[in-house]
Image (cartoon, rainbow, N blue to C red; front, top):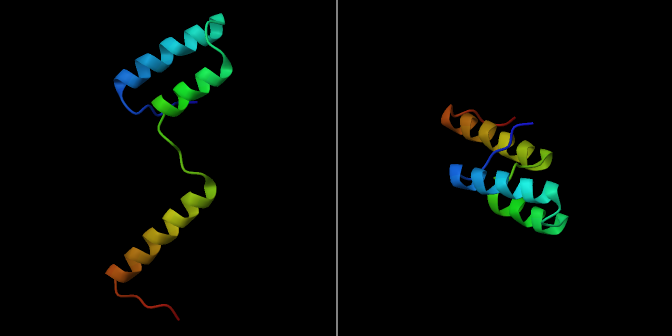
Length: 68
């Protein structure tokens, strides 16, 4: 699975911390904090559905299509 990092610097930091975690130098909670700091948030299914619905509504408005 590909990860979406906030920046190249954050990717490097996260990869280094993963090494520390694998060696036991940092615990799971600390690794989770680095995940939050370094990785971009991916919207869940509900959020994605709402975003898609909003795109459909905006396209309908642009085309002047009315409901019903």
